[in-house]
Length: 280
Image (cartoon, rainbow, N blue to C red; front, side, top):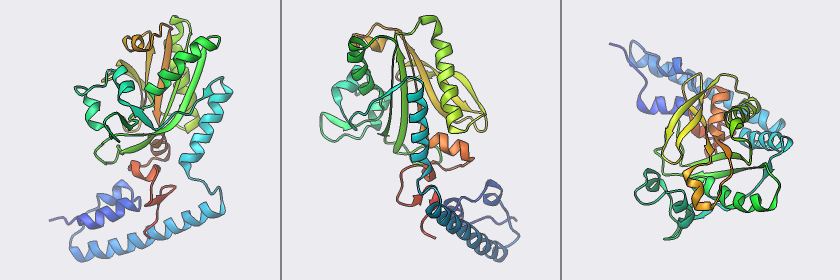
């Protein structure tokens, strides 16, 4: 009968970023398993210490911050204007996105009071900003935002309650160029994130109906999701222009680029620093 890691041992090995083969390893008896665990933990802890030392003496900034800088610089160089909107979002703006009490996303929202919540997405605020910019600026208008969003997700390898989104959009482009533009924007972001293996798939969205998703070739993880308009949601904002928009989860981009398996290592954390476990 094969012996496997205890739950506590496996959890510790996951924390220390052990690979899949190590996590699936089987033993003939508990003594061999426990000796192997001690050796593995010691080696992984030493590796994490070296990574911490390299961070301190090297770039001194987490990958999440560095990726954000790379994406901002790239988008600005391609004619996008960065905006920065509040983390608090009103119930009324969610309602304009048809996110009411009956909507699946509504149950995942962190409410601060009866009328305000921590934003579960960037789109409502971007809609609010773009409706005025379309009056003030010559078209096409390109804007983007990088910001933290919050949802009551079940914490796991691919989900987090707090995550970082990049949303970019272009309004006032020719309708016949929408698909091409979405594909080109996806390619720009993926290249900046250092990801080569991805594909585009048409999916169904609870908010936009139909989306063009960016999916990792490695494990099928959704990295980004794009949509185009005119769209029925535009009516609430009195917008009639043709547009495209696409959003990416930065932590998912980092996890895919690094070949990681646990999303929490790549986000904001008090247990990890730049993906390096601190309780070592």
